[in-house]
Length: 466
Image 1: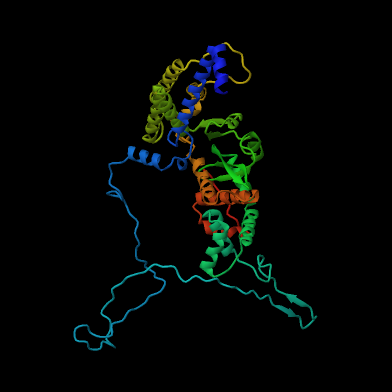
Image 2: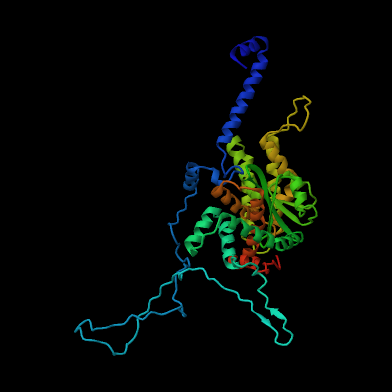
């Protein structure tokens, strides 16, 4: 709308100009609120904060403790080995005072020092000879069998394949740099195609483990769920995670919501307690819903900072005080303490709803009625009180969804390093192999040993998940 059109509108309908000004002011306020959003008052990741905001927050929570190890902290240091790999004896040839020869004089003792280092690394080449013999009686020729995995005249073994997978899928080193590292370490020139083929073999070998993880997740009493956007082949995909403290499952899908959840086939039949961050697609399923309070704390911080509404700060304190009480108890809170927490929670919601009434302007509009952010949050707090405060009644229920968020963290690191996945196949390799590695680590298994098992027909299998 240009200046002349505005002037005509002002002459014809002054009220319309007032409405327009109100809308513009509301839009400006909304945009200003967005400028103040970061990881402490919204669901944005800390990596998006920028250096200035991180520095201000760091100063605000600066501890009085001195930097470095604290008094009484049990440090870790290099200790002498009782069984050194090899020993070098440094002899004395002459007396340092009179310069006479000490050859043939027995040592009175030794002063000992040890150096820990990596031995020279080189590739070991094992030649397999399968003999064949001719029977002197019937003249038949009988041939020995090669080991099951020795199928070609020349090939790479399980240890170097495990190391290639370790570099590219666990340490998230891009293919070209993986090629460089293999050459620098072992003097062998491989191609990026070899890295791809090795990862494909690991992906195929990990199928049974992935199926076992899926089956076990369906029976867990508490399950964490989350999802994050990733780019593959230039288009947006969604990486979904379902996990516990012993199991990790990842799946890549074009969609974020119901279509992906149905395709993964874990949540639709799940009857336990699902921890998530209010994503509406999860709420459509009949399991018990546990809501992430860390997300709520950030939202409440944002409401208080953006709208200046005291109830949001009070509710944040209720949740954090309740968490403190839970953290300081070994078994459970008594019924009186729980009742007090619930009463405070409900009083604050009533106060907030009075401050943010559901206004009806009498105009009938299509679709869902637009509400303010404070009102929306208050209605969620009221509707899902049981799922939000579940952690005060049952200590096995977590306060937040940090388990799933930690399990997703490395894919964001991968995206920062490489920017995106080149193809959907690369995404799928990452998801399955990452789930395999994460689950092995949660079982205290060595990652390289577990990866080596993929190339030796003995993949790691999870057991006894808690």
